[in-house]
Each structure stands twice: as structure tokens, then as C-alpha cells.
Image (cartoon, rainbow, N blue to C red):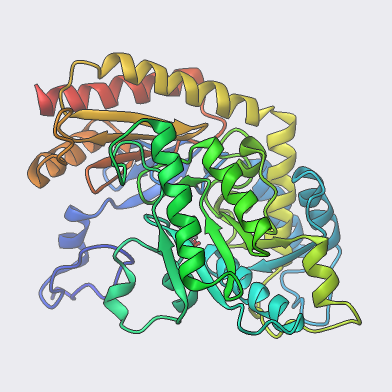
Length: 440
Ligand code: PMP
């Protein structure tokens, strides 16, 4: 007797499951059975280069991380961090603070990226509350930003997702992001940046600087299509925030800890946010974990005479997650993986630009470090390609052994930071074959 499938998957179109078995669903979804390094294997043993998400920064099954975690499991498999501490919390935090140029003085651990953004939002609110500026409670985030799934992090997400859930937290506003392929106005890059900056200033004026608490930026928009922000734009946003006593939150849940070829994208962009979130690359997928950093300015208000942050998850700061993060950082340092991410990322991008140059539907190839995207659209009209072609391409990529993330006519590729030249060539050759097959 066949049993119907009973899992509701996140962000995945689900058919009516009443008469669908696990077998039926596995024909639509990729059934991943095993994984090692940059590769995963399905039920039939077919291998795929795993570039779907920014999480596996050093690939899967890394023996050094597994050993560090196993040792920690034996030593202390859990301890709360609520009024308790364990021996890895301070070393990990010190290391992370050092890697982020000592800009921050405190770290708060969470279980995921949404939790890290939620924490940044609450810290912002508490910061201004304690300064007796309770009315400073509004947030401005940019069009196309993705910040998470909780109600607050979802309220500052501008991707047509929150509308499914009705009323959001009040006081969330948006301003245009300088997306150069789909700019809010026609013009040169400088004109588009100036326009977006002016719109941000107008939004602050509309909301009122005395009510605007923070601006949230994703230095490289991830979910929206791997779109690196213009450098001048971000530097100016930082200045605008400072001039108006508004906190700057850099959401680096995806970009943080090496993904862009820098420990943080903020370092690449030369900005110094007041709060910064990291999650996916923190443990590289070996343990669900996130972190929110805050500067001394915030610490000084929050803890001026001692204080309490009435927020936190029961299992945050988990010792096994800390062990994974510490080992992962050592690997990135010892194997010089930031440089590898910069060099191999650039290599993949450059070669794809050449190999796909004759395909009329490839409108832009962009990215930073090991975040690479290919946007499909009519080169002249910039109209996205039709859905059917996208579906065929997505399937073809799988046949060619590439698991990327195809969404809204954009292929997102997140190769691990330690991708070898040989694997990079595999990605380039097989992405090219899939595109040529579908579009020629
Ligand atoms: N912020 C950004 C920039 C993200 O890309 C994501 C995840 N896609 C999140 C927040 C939410 O992280 P999580 O899915 O771990 O909750």
C-alpha cells in the first residue's frame, strides 16, 4: 500500500499530496542521498556539483570539521548559554571579532540567519528605547532585499513574500536598490546611484529621521539574483545613516565569512555597519547557527549599568556549533581559501562570459567571489525569458551534473570556497553545454 508523502518543503511548490508517494515527489525534487566535498549523489548514484546555496563553504563531509564536532559531542553535547557559558564561546567570539577588523565588541548567537536579523532589529529597538528615543522604531530596507522568514525579518524583506501573511510589523519602508540591469531610471551607473541615494534621503524625510531607527543593506543581494551593490552607493548610504543618527545593519547572512573572498562583504566595500549578521558560512552547514555583531556604541547603551536583552533561542551558542565554526575558520585560514574564492570565482565568471557571449538570452553574468549569477533576459528589451525555457534549462543543468538555484530567470551558483580549478572547469563546461543546448 502506498503511503502519501507528508513533508511540506520550504519555498517549494507542492502538489496536492493526498495521492503522492515519496517516490512521486522524488521525481520532481532532487533526492540527495550522499555528499562529499563539492559533490552530492542522488538515489541512482548520479553525481552533481553542489552549488545551490552559500552554505557549504568548504564542501560536505570535511573530516577536520567532523572530528572537531565529534570531540565536542563527546565532551559536552549541549549547554545552554542563558546564564551559563562554555569553553568555546569566548574563543570563537574573539576570533570572529578579530576577523571583522575589531569593529565589533559583542556577538549574540542565534540558530539561523532569520534569527540573526531578528536580533539586529530588536537590538536596534532596545538601543533607541534605552536612549529614550522610543519613536525611533522604523526600518528602511532596499527593494529586492531578503532578510528572513520571521515576522520582523520578513517585514523588511522586499521580494513579494510577506504579502502572503497579512499584517506585518509597522514602520517598515523601502527604497530602490541600484540594480544596473533593471534600474529604477534610465541613465548611467552614476546617475542611477545618485537617483537611489536621493530616493533613500526622500524616504528618510518622509518617515522622519527622528523615527527612522535603521537602514538594512545586503551588500550583495543574494536571493534577488546575486547583485553586488555599487561601491559608492553603499559608502554613501553609510554616510546618510550616520548623518541622521540611523543605525546601519549589514545583513551578511549569505556573504559573511568568506563567501565573497573577504571575511565580510563590508570589508570589501569599506563600510563599518553598527550591526552585522552572519549565518550560512558561520559553520558551512555543519550546524545551524547564526550570529549578530554589534559595535561598542551599542554595547555602551545596552549595558551601561549592566542590562538584559530579553531575547534568545534556547539552543543558541551551542558548543558543537562553536566547534564547527572554529575549525572551519582554521581551514579557511590555513588553506588560503579567501584568495581561492576570489581567484576561482573570477575565473568562472570570466570564462562563462566568453563561453556564453553568443547566447542572446544571457543578459548579465555577475557576482563577487563565490557568488555568481547568470540572468536570462532578452538582451535588447530586458524582458525575462519565458517560464518554459527556464524550466527546460533547469532540467538540462541537472542532466549536466550541476545543481544550481534557478529562480526568476536567474541562475545562482554558489561553489564552495575551496573549489579546485578542475571542478571550476567542470562547472564552466557543463553550464555552457546546458545553455547552448537549450538556447541554440
Ligand atoms: N538574510 C539573508 C541575506 C539571507 O540570504 C537569508 C537566507 N536566504 C536570511 C537572511 C535568512 O536566513 P535563514 O534562512 O538561515 O533563516
